[in-house]
Length: 428
Image (tube, rainbow, N blue to C red; front, side, top):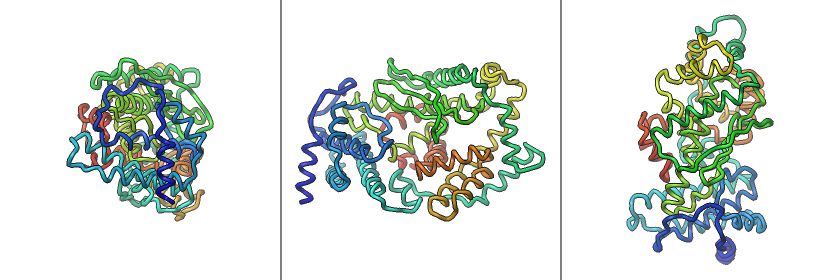
């Protein structure tokens, strides 16, 4: 019965139709993944019908998406199809493949297994934070105890002396560097433009790439990139909370250049169009690809602005645009650099909270203490962990892995962003 269900499902999922973006320029007749790749795309679309937000980006045939919506397959059928495709990928002999095809095989296998695990989660299966991170994102976690971050807090005490909780003092200090609402659009666009200028000096992008910028409210995140295909992105900035001056460059690099926008545009241009790897028409959010995406996007800030170049640009351009005193920029940048060493605490707090070791109030309080943020921002951070769970590891751990692997080399950044890269490749 299971084999019959899988066969009928495969027939349903493999209908051909016109695409919404240009066809791949290269699709070899002897492609061993010719049946697997489109079936994978349609499987992910099917999972997306069960979980809102699971499909982060899709620019393949519109009819495939309509078919997935109309079919609305049940979890047992989706699991059976995932199992079938995992077996099909495993059956492809890597000795018959070239280097890029071997990377493709590993990429498909890892992502199909992540799909399979996510289906169990949707059905209600519970796993530890570490097991979930391993299954979805392909990494082994080694979380530090929060006490390891206490010496960092002690160093920051010297930067922001005074009475009261350190988080309150830091929040009060940062509040002097909020971008006024009426200057937000100009400041953010200037930051993104500078990030783009620095990225395109090293990475050749498709000629038709561009983005649209929007300001939104009511989100658990501070910024988001929705890739639309054809080199086009929608970058959204959440204005629920005040936006500090440092976010212009941070968001410009992370969501745009050389971050998510560049990453998606290169995958589409080099792999989907260039090699016919149509599995890159879709991006499942809870997958190993997200560790690569978030890690390189975070590291992209330091890659594009090494040393004191970020400070100099903010002083010369962004502070005046925001109506802030450029003379105070070094003090603000020193605090930002010091607090960055606390990034790993977010993962420890999320793991303890989601594993039931601490309650929500404790998670908020610890986020205030080790994130050095206001209660409102701590609430937003905990809400993000509640919604996205172990996804939070992709920022801090992903950045650490990307930094260790790329080491300031733009050519390596481009290679990582334009190939079927897995977290294990960064570990090597």
